[in-house]
Image (tube, rainbow, N blue to C red; front, side, top):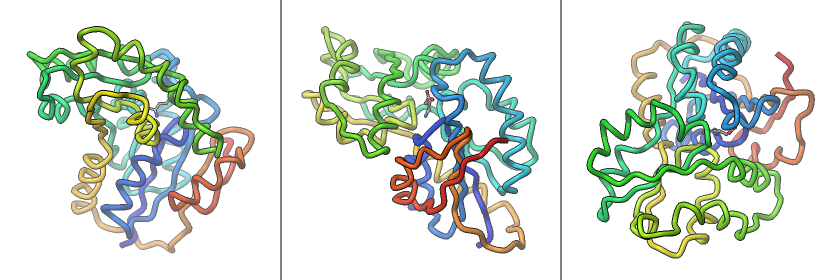
Length: 265
Ligand code: DGL
């Protein structure tokens, strides 16, 4: 298969999606782009993301000639997907927060959406709740610090469980919080902390992300495309910004991206 995918996120979060894609499509070649320079996306306004992303993705598409682009970031997908799609000529797959599966999985009727502050404030998420979780009690929690903690973890730094507990405390305290039995991981960084999240919470909770659904979507899209005839190239991670932050190189290699290159588009 000569297909090549471009996986894009603000940082290492998209690696949780890349892992699901390569599990389903081991022969698919991938490039990864982390927009280090502009992270965290969760603190940016919709206007800032809409101004940056279509142009940046168009440059990357030109440079890397992917057959499919995966915006492996909830914050970008729930804000700027239409503009990104209009800027490129290949199919673009975005992340949809897994509110529907969580609403189907809950037994208590109480679910939580844990994302970046940007994502949980988006109308897109309100619409998903109206469409797929009506009648459920839905708690929303935004966290920027969990994004940093995931970046630190993949840079090889120890994860402090107490910090994670502090982030989750507002969600699980109180009567409504005690009823939560399903949490939507509505930021692609958060599945990278799945073990720590489990350890930080005493009640029994399903942690649900969208990685597998994205992999299925990419698989079905590629079935409709014609592979390009081109020379194979090693899977590479491009880090937008002046430096390669070498401390995350081992993590990129672990996910199959042996080359890590700084990129100033
Ligand atoms: N990984 C991104 C997401 O899924 C956001 C991280 C950030 O705030 O930059 O929303």
